[in-house]
Structure formats: C-alpha cells, structure tokens
Length: 191
Ligand SMILES: *[C@@H]1O[C@H](CO)[C@@H](O)[C@H](O)[C@H]1NC(C)=O
Ligand SMILES: *[C@@H]1O[C@H](CO)[C@@H](O)[C@H](O)[C@H]1NC(C)=O
Ligand SMILES: *[C@@H]1O[C@H](CO)[C@@H](O)[C@H](O)[C@H]1NC(C)=O
Image (cartoon, rainbow, N blue to C red):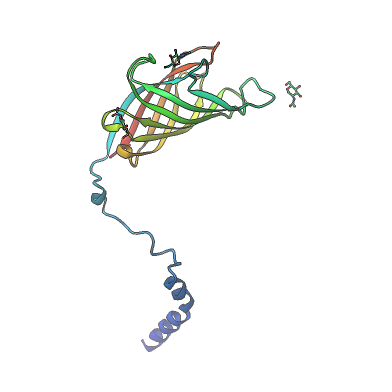
C-alpha cells in the first residue's frame, strides 16, 4: 500500500509540467463540455421532404450563373470550368412560380470522362418560417444522368443538425443557351 502511494506521489509530482500548462489554460481537456440537448430545445428528430425547382440561368441580362474560371483549352466535358450561382428556387417548374429561396454557391466541372459537376451550394430559404434557414448540399452531379443523388451535409436555423440527401432530375435543358431547370427532391433529417 505504501509502495503504491509512493508511486502515485512520484507520478503526480513528475507531472508538474503538465499541471503548469493546464494553469495556462493550454490543455485540450477543458474546452469541450457536454450539454443536455434540452438546453438547445432539441426534441424529436424529424424527416422533412420538399420539392423545389432550381433555375440555372447562364444566358441573357439576368444570368444567375456565371463562369468565373474558363480553361484556355476547353475539353468536351468542360473540365475545369467553375460557375458561381445565385439560382432561384421555386415551387413550380416555371420561373414565375412561387420563389422560396436561392441556391448560392458554385459548381465545378470536375470530370474528364463525362459532364460531372461538384456542387457546393447553400439553399437559402426566404419563405415563411424557413426564411433565413439554410441547408448545405455538397456532392457529385453527373448532369446527363436521369437522376443524381447528392448529400445534404448540414444546415442552419430550422435545419440545424441537418443531414440527408437530394435527388436531382433535369426538367429542361436548353442546349443552345445552357439554361437548365432541375427538379430537386430533398429529404432532410433535422430537429
Ligand atoms: C431582366 O430583369 C429585368 C428586371 O426584372 C426585366 O425587366 C428584364 O426583362 C429581364 N431581362 C431578361 C433578358 O430576362
Ligand atoms: C489544346 O487541345 C488541342 C486539341 O485537343 C491540342 O492539340 C493542344 O495541344 C491543346 N493545347 C494545349 C495548350 O494544351
Ligand atoms: C425574410 O427575412 C428578411 C430579413 O429578416 C426580411 O427582410 C424579409 O422580408 C423576409 N422575407 C419574407 C418573405 O418574409
């Protein structure tokens, strides 16, 4: 017993350096605390579904999608192009239908084999109680496939702790102008 106490004494006295850094507030043990979810009013997690139409307007005076990077030697798959977007999200396929938010971010043509986009965008909602809330979509969008699935990796406001996925289907694509209307079915778990 005495021996154990002696060993403990030596261990604790030899850890004086560690205690010094702890006094400096420099340790990695004290800055994370666990929190009761009730304190953030987190109740039941729920699954929400909504369908939106995403309007990528690249032509005309009111373009909502602009190329900010264009490779000097453009390949057939557009590899290397980056577009910044502020695309309207509406409830119906017509641009004149109810606007509920905007898709803001960028997409990068990142496939050499086919037209494949890396989508990196926030759906910023402006309608009703969702005004000011966002979900973040980050994923691969091979635009000539019938259906593309992309992860929802987070959210804010009413979509805090969001995770889920979206399924995108092209509604119309104008080969001449490059304008596209895409149906997005969103499945999101949140509180
Ligand atoms: C651009 O927007 C303005 C103002 O909303 C509108 O008057 C004009 O017709 C639009 N132009 C095109 C090409 O859609
Ligand atoms: C651009 O592409 C053409 C056709 O594929 C090729 O012959 C040429 O070498 C390329 N130029 C550069 C700078 O990569
Ligand atoms: C959404 O919120 C913004 C900022 O709080 C406000 O200016 C805007 O009028 C709201 N929009 C709707 C449709 O309630």
